[in-house]
Length: 482
Image (cartoon, rainbow, N blue to C red; front, side):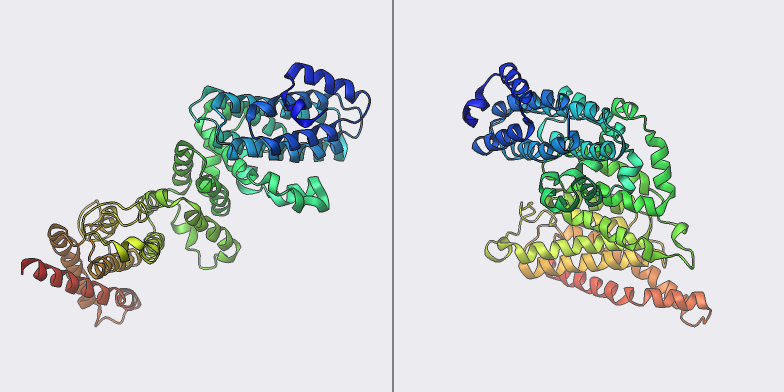
């Protein structure tokens, strides 16, 4: 029977054929080859549904070599799902829902097979089922409307199976190593199977995010998100591990913004007020969690450009640590520099108007709001020095960079060159800061107490940048009156 004909046979009739042929031979390899071949010919979701339905029934009828047969089938099934979910342009929601109903049905069939096994075979099949569920969860979240009730029901079923596989929220956030699990399931062939499991890491994070989205999902998994948040909030190592895991939601372009928003809120919740005394121990062993810190910062480079500024602004607004604010502001400056270097609009079509350019999402008036957050905090008055010196220095460097770049390029995308903004920066940001810095330096320059020396050393790098900003603004104000 040709693959074209098989792809078009009605689901019930095809299932009967499969079960009959299975009574004669081990049919799983034949069937999954048919599915894979059919998916190469067409990515139409309607052609994939019948074979998936039949395969779900075949799994529960396997009499021997259970794990080996499922192990052969799962990679091909996942490749087919990936092609239909992410690469097909003509599949509508109804067709995709039908495909994922069958995919969840296959997960339930594998679950039934697990209950027939014990020992190592059971452990391996449960691990394989866990990988399958996580990959399906990622593809489902990226392809079916977030607001669709069917999506929530399918997620609920997958989450229940995930719990059976021993995948708790905390273990997923802090201890789940995809490569290790794949190695356990596929042995020496693990590298050959990584491509079909390319979104498992996203599924790991999404398992937790869906628990935040739906109380029903969290209840079904018997997880206490309150306890998990408290644990992550109070344990710095676990917190950084969780941040490294959750970054995959933010970097997945196909996911809806609603899921990313829940992820950001969760990140803010577990990090709120954490940058404090717990890091100040004289003998703290930073090396143990520095890799996780760098992994967490990698989140920012993985986020799509159009969303990256909003997330950086949220991080700056909700962070109490001057050093972390400085890092985030420096990232903003680096992004703006890269946009200038890469944008042909700066070189070929400079525009002096205050308009947002799609290829330069960081060059907007919002960047001045970041500077103001630091130089004129919402609580009023100048920033607290020397405590906030790192953040202030970064904010001044950002302001100077924007001012000089806009002046040189004869643009004004941020509005930094408008007279009203120049006057505001001069009178409300720079002059009060100069008065504060001058007063502190005068008070401490003749004092040789260690605290005074440290204060002077801290403010020394800040002073020249501040005065250069004042000079630049004064020059621009003079030019605007001539």
